[in-house]
Structure formats: structure tokens, C-alpha cells
Image (cartoon, rainbow, N blue to C red; front, side, top):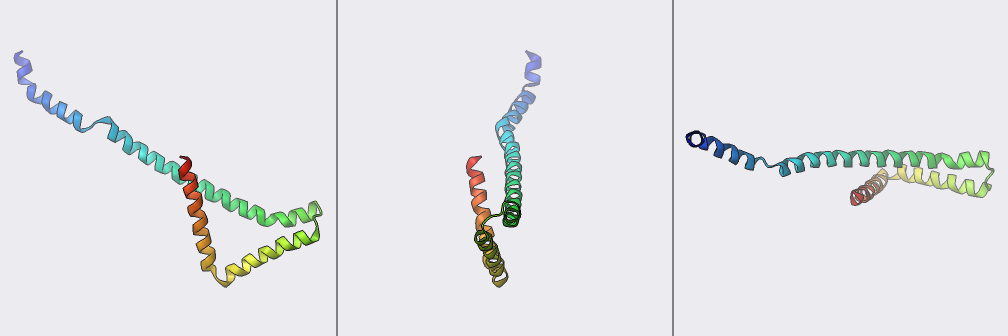
Length: 115
């Protein structure tokens, strides 16, 4: 009993310290960082996939025209559309940048909604 009285102040100190450092806020901070890293990886993966899809789509008309023998009017219309887009980009790149930001925002919102 006498030992308990001697160490009562230390016991109270450790009890107060344990209450101050509860596990839930620590877990929330750690998991928040992990989730933020996962969101960044998803965003980079979506951006890289979208970039790859755009590059692949730009090469598709030439590939299909050579291998499948698509109708010449369809191939020329797709090539003409690509030239129009490149002319638009060279005429005013600000609109292309705005479109890219809008598309990136939409992809980010869609990725965040699923998580």
C-alpha cells in the first residue's frame, strides 16, 4: 500500500499521457498520408493512360488505312480532324490548355468518387 502511494503521481502522469496519445488520431494521420499517396498514384496512372490512349488514337487511322483498307473518305476525314485540332492548338494554345485542365479535373473527380 505504501509503494502505491509513492508511485501514485507517476501512475497519474502515465495515465494522462496515454489519454493524450490515443491510437485513433495517430491512425487517422498515417492513413490520411497513405490515402493521399494512393490518390496521387491513381491520378498519375490515369494521366499516363490518357496520354497513351491519345497517342495510340492519333496513330490508329494510318494503321487501319494500311492494314485493313478502310474507306478512303473515312481515313481522310479522321486525318483532316487531326489537322484541324493541331491548327486550333497552334492558333490559340490557351484553349487547348483550358481543355486539358477541364479534362484533368473531370478525371480527378471521377477517381476521387470511387475511392
